[in-house]
Length: 191
Image 1 (cartoon, rainbow, N blue to C red):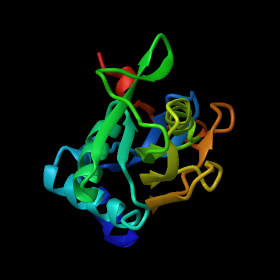
Image 2: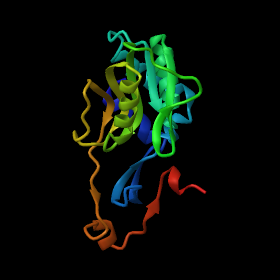
Image 3: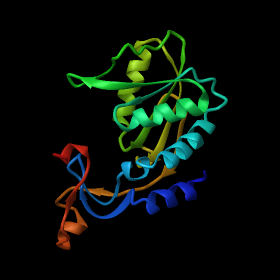
Image 4: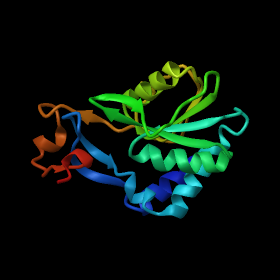
């Protein structure tokens, strides 16, 4: 899949939304990406992850790892496409960690996957787990990079879709100034 096809899929499934959104960071944005609108379709998830796996097929990946929640789906599908194991990290007392008997062997070649990166913070936390286990980071694969080039890692970053999405403080927000109603999105707002 090329970038235009990925963007079209995200738009057609309603994963890319336009409006006035309050982000988890407290900033406001005119665009929001709700990845689960596309990931709820197993066939689309399989296609996206196969495209991501294709970018790392020569990296001799031994295990694919992603952070809970969306990273579980992606690690599984990318791992399936690469013929490797797939594991995930979880937060315990605010710290990203491996549980459920998962481990990374010293020297094992590891691909980190994530659905969307904005700052890259969650990926950095997963990378720290990889390093603590003695794994060798070979790459980071994401569906959507909305960092505007600000998120960088110590291994190659591959994204299927790069989006530049402006974010504003409440005081600077043009949608607030225009009186547009705001929508809160994201799992932290779900009751």
